[in-house]
Length: 263
Image (cartoon, rainbow, N blue to C red; front, side, top):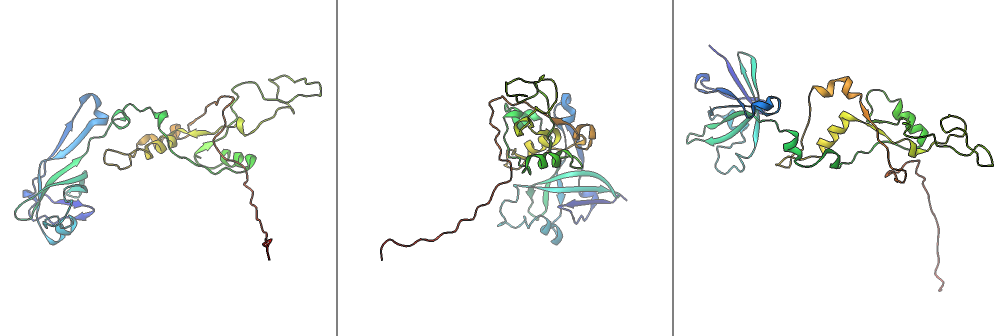
């Protein structure tokens, strides 16, 4: 005899007769050209009997006064002979006259980048991403030598000739391609190179779906060291004022007294 176990919201449902549960899974390819992004799976209507356990699992949705009973999906796991055959959602669609719960097991189709972002370009999305940065040299050393995969690093990317000061009082300069004592570097010469995969994660954390919920992103790419160790650099215009506050902020304590000029 086949043993079927259905877990809703991580709780085992009461199933009086597994044969009458009526579970039949179907796979739908909404767009065969995009198998990796549009694959979906659902079931025909599944009937779960009313019981004390099942009523509690569904928040007593069979009580007429319960509100919003059809407005959210429940997590669902289906085991057949102790083998996991389905991991998705259960969407409640109907409660019959006997108080039994009817609905569908489903795995929602994944959305493409175009569906999520529309006509918005990735570089047009804005989100806050603050990092620890105080004294210049100590902070550069902290991020450039941090173990693991830091959010950013501060390499010196030579986009042009070396910035220098005159080597003598006559205003003469040494060769601009020679690294010597006249080279002068400031914080504006070390723009951060941010981690590519962490940048993508930050971008998607700032997005919301059509229900106002955060949009997540995942996949094997986030476990591939060839990708997780990639950083991207950029060059600002020479007149660009960096929009950040760096350095050790001073603290001032002021104490004083006053008295009236009258009396």
